[in-house]
Length: 425
Image (cartoon, rainbow, N blue to C red; front, top):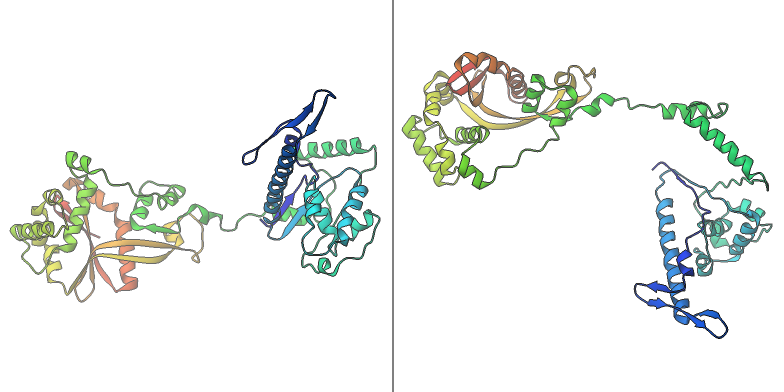
């Protein structure tokens, strides 16, 4: 984090469990006290003293781990806040560490700590920036050279509350917090007011981009222009595809419409266009696909061979067979200006969106490309125009991709296998 505050550093460590009559440790067992009934006195046994020392070291180790985590979260500035009663006495005790040498504090100082300040104070006393604490402790010992050579920089602020005035300080703080809760100024604006205000009121200049997908498929764009709002459309890119149904459900209920469409596209991609493409010829090729495990027998049975043969017997099919080159299931990726995909976003042309898709069929006729997209759903003939209009944006994007990568698209066609009709755009 840029700035980290670590407060409450003067709070005492919790050693309450060490005062119990019997101490327990997961590895060392129990440490009881010895009771002298005659003199009515209890004494700690050697086992209890050993457990007490071990448990105390474990408490200190955990507290040291917590302090380490807190002090290593800051990227730019670390602000440590702590309070202590009789601060001059504490500082005098911490100054005892100034006469020690070595990079680390002695084990005795570490083990004798009762709060985080008992670790931080001695460490700062040995630092070149710790003069304020050394003065507070009424000593100015010579610092060992190894302790002064530090790359860290510290600013130490000491606020001393006069004896008997703690109540007034608490009341003043309560009044300031009350003003803050009521959203009222807690005091006159200082020299940093404008700087702090500008940082707190800062807003991300590209907020509109956070509700848009940076990469979309052509199918998602088609859905967006049909029924979805901009925010809803952004979510589509992060939706995972539905998993396939279990085999036993597929055997019992047959293929879904989407699964049948996938099978038909697979067959259209793998048909050998140089072989005979009438009904018997197509059946023979499909049988070969089953034999080579490209299709399952159930998938083969779901196909309308007659509809495929009718396509190749029609005008579009004959143009495909006579073409100089036919590209099938051709994937593409391109960058499109964001305002073309999100016209209501208000963004300039500098922003782009990555669009990806797959062309069903691209036919090179020498003087330009014929773009062909298959549709496998059952559509009533009288609804062809209405259904085809839904794919206008999709075909325009396909055509834009082809023209930016390969060359001119002279015609765009949709072919509906059922009822076997085609629509030109």
